[in-house]
Length: 365
Image (cartoon, rainbow, N blue to C red; front, side, top):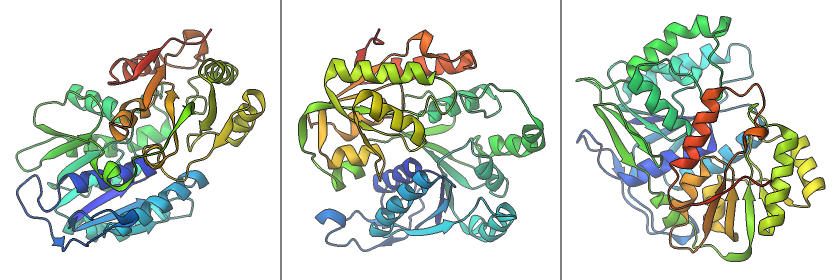
């Protein structure tokens, strides 16, 4: 059995991409259990061979993430995979109960697939893994930072955090340290990174390219509209970008490129989105699936505008051959809040600078 742990819709999408990229065989040469392919899958597309994969959703608490995850879980079940919805948060004793319930599955699994190596929840589960083979699938651009930190032997810290250790981090430090060792390859343990991001892995880690083949086989090609669409980010919510500067930048981009729709990030606050609608006139769209699927399903603008984010790496792959142009707008230094760390500034510059097949746009005045 192969066991995957996901906490976001994008992670579940990339688990499906990983399974699609390797039907019927594992990287170690051990065959996966495969059920006979069905004549057609969802949307009338042929099914790929289905591996013996159980996906455990460690459900978050915010409604938008939960809604998108439920839709992604439906797609995973349509593909023939087992999906287990685990209410892992928000209730007293939920963490201990979840670990106790999942421990037998962890011991039986041949390979563990995870979507967020920075997750304290996943790190806790990894302490029970031992010598299992591991695969890390993309959780957005955070994969780039994960690979860098692993190569340098640094502790795992999300790029937008300032790195200060509070009481909680000190208590969990042994768990994080053990999880990092689990994510380091050895003679007994293969570690794979399945990614669409440009990464330079440390020795011993296998990198497999995510080309979004499953997405392209199941959705589209999309209908292309004449206008432009704008992709939202949660940079305000994570404390990186000043909210007033962000609204002004969105309005300037919309005016310059004739954008009419704004695809909201699932973590964007309702208050900010309401302000954007009032001050920019954009139609606010809250997608029920990850943007790669929404764009592939269409309709989508001939130009898709974005600030530095995951989609500047993933959308060109999902939309290859459609004629859609993905354009990324640089962040002006004055947009960043005083609390944004220098590390965050460097990371965002790297997200833009390493993006392939995109147009670069200067920050609007």
